[in-house]
Amino acid sequence: MEESSFIEKLLLFGLGRQEACIYLCLLKNESLTGYEVSKLTGISRSNVYNSLAALVDHGAAYVCEGPSTKYVAVDLQEFCDNRLRFLETQSRELVMNAPKKQVESEGYITIEGYGRICDKIHHMLKDTEYRVYFAAKSQFLLLWEKELTELVKAGKKVVLITDEGEKLFTETEDVRQGIQFYQTYVSEEDEEPSDRQIRLIIDSAYVLTGEVAQTAQDTCLYSAQQNFVAVFKQALRNEIELSKLKA
Image: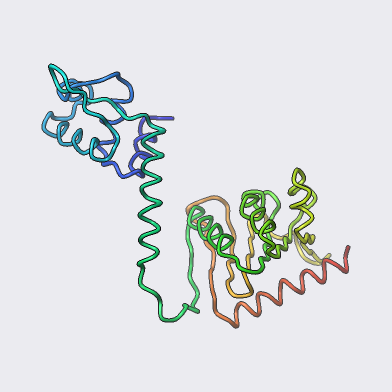
């Protein structure tokens, strides 16, 4: 991985850019004084000492006392694990104390970007209480094997509408048996459906639909609007019935 990409990922763990650069420098060396870090990174000594103090506070560096004060990097895996554990604790506290919405929104929400869409799918599947209907190409459904497996094991209804269902969950037959598979229906008059199209409905209450190409320009529509959900649900039901007739 290039240094620039490495530093960008460190920023996600709460480090400032100079702190990330200095942490990377410490990872490459046994132990360094502030002066040595300044010489190696080209960062001014005053900024180096401020950043080193911040790294210690963040749990990314240790102070080695001796004739001269030196700093050593905390192991990268240890640092990442500690930050994730800290954030999990903070997340639980935030969720417990978050203000409650008076009414569930029934509007239409546009979700942009492949990463954000995947985040939404993850949480929709995670929050499923009763049933999930998921229509997409098999290669996309494979990305959600863990979440879908957990739903099946929890006794939730899972229905997948896809092109190559026989390729899914072949190594976990018990899970496969707990899923209802239907072939994506295509009439003789219609063209092949887009490889990018996804349709997801959770608990007959929440819908996500759109196309994904793994780009920042991907867009999906999310809604809990009852009329829209009802129409969407009926469309999937019709597709399943047509798939049965064609089988």
